[in-house]
Image (cartoon, rainbow, N blue to C red; front, side, top):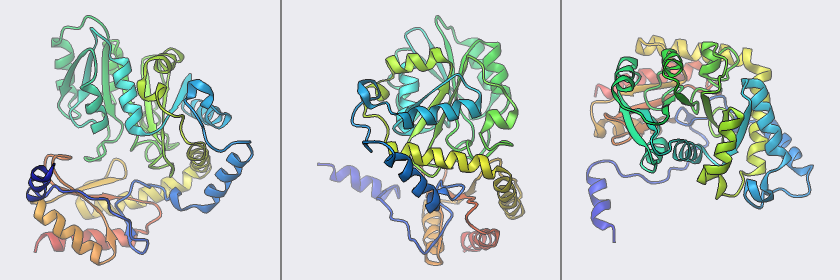
Length: 365
């Protein structure tokens, strides 16, 4: 039924299939930035947290009895640490972006979204009742121009990422000022910045020292720095209540896994307790990346440009044969192919020195 389409994907070098991680390889590909997915103490504590209750599954929607003290306690901890009024958990980052954008952009509103925003947001943008305007990646002048020249009957809503998942660059501080100036609602996807930037490792609000305001919405995921699975949204009580009443991916879905939320809560507490040590480890890895590439990473993602798709796959496979796992990212995910190297605090700096040296050697062959 789809033979021709699959063959076209293969010919283009864009074919995908699930990949099982090699437990013996040095992982420089996953989003487990702080190595929490390997910490058995956190796993055991999460089991104990869930085991303290009569049931271990959510059983139903948040709005039909599926809301649990484990959900509530995690939301409360997130609010207290990040300074937001309210929070709600989602089943995944994709579902969170889908729910946020589909719900918040109403008829007469205009969504202004960075062209490099995550695919989940771009999919959601196709479902909205309002208009959608993209602006050049991290280009605040282009955003200002689009905001100034676009007629808006309702609300202006901006959507950006804290640290972009492929480019690895951080959103400029100016976006907060621009949102305030235009009275816009600002959505910040902190999937790759929460746990990796800021003095408290809370993300870009923390990094820039910005106190949350009623027009700020923060989305974070649990499957990256927190070493679990799921997502959350932090915002004003009004916005969270609106999501509870309009976000279809929240309303018509089983409540998030109790174990995943409990594991994320344990990871969140671990980061808070170990943030100074973790920041030092992050800085050391960023130093190594800067020495190798000539550019200091703003987060923990290092994109290494490749000449073409064939070279990207060849170098990735050669590194894999040597015991190093990195991501080979190809169009249409990115405009041009890259090797995506993740700086993970569980990996020693010497491995990154070796990796970057081998990439340079293999790419030149």
